[in-house]
Length: 406
Ligand SMILES: [Zn+2]
Image (cartoon, rainbow, N blue to C red; front, side):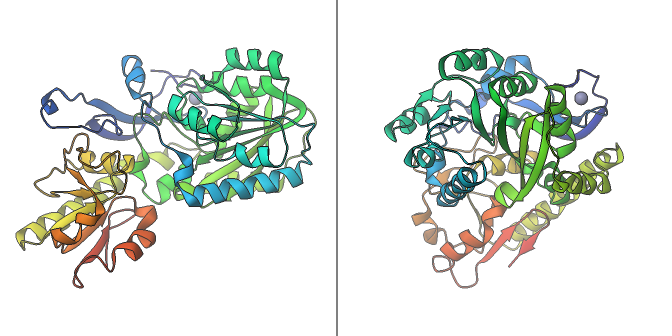
């Protein structure tokens, strides 16, 4: 297998999580559970360009294309984050009614609506029909297709090139990353810029966030790998910001390479990555062992709780919980139920582990001794919400970066 970006053979394994179903393949019933399909989930690192990437399964790629809809506007923190970004971008880039903004993976219009309100012409690219429809309801114009060089060539003819391109949490999810990046270069005005946000691989490694690895997430990005990719497409990363979103993200600012001045923030983050060994094989080789320890500690906790006849339930049926549970091979014997506020998931079963999903208003009835919060990034928020619901002796548990019972 060769690197998705530079085509060099991949020889450096990063982590092997075994075989599991797609993380969003929730089951409506257990009747057909025996036919559930599993696929290997293994990540390699390219020793040439340092792009971390899932093992390639051409047949499976079709299956992992998200057919479910996640609506960005349901997260108030994310909407506020988008609003702040838009205000900042308008001011710093001097955007006006003569500018043109393009968003890739525009979702339900959570971000472009703010440009629209400011009177700045904009267009969204969004291949998922349900979210595209929600964006149109907000008045946002959407092209319902996958982005790449072919679509960029079309859009350039119909709309002209862009002053600003926004690509939030999409770069890691595209199978043909070179085609996507080439499309960005083709759509930028000579003085145009592109803002790209992605979860930072440095945080994944240092905070042991192996549960953010799933089949639909093809690439795990560092500034080293993104910078190399942009350079190959004639672009330069000229500024980097660190964001707290998704367990620690980077926002990189990219422009066409002609005469762009590079901000010190770029070398600063590159140096941090170098310090962590991310441009050496040693920076990746130890990860499998570290994760095995995280798994062992959590399984020991579950077995001890079972031995003491304690009731352990889980909270949060998101994708990351599925990678975690399936890697540890936890099923409903060890965790009988998971509670989740999303109506679309209630009454269904988690893929692989087959743990039933119930609404949070049934949590009190389960009389738990422990609530395992699967989305560890929401620990404080979830604990505050559930504190008054659970019995006074009940403790909250997170497993990442290390076992934490309080
Ligand atoms: Zn490579």
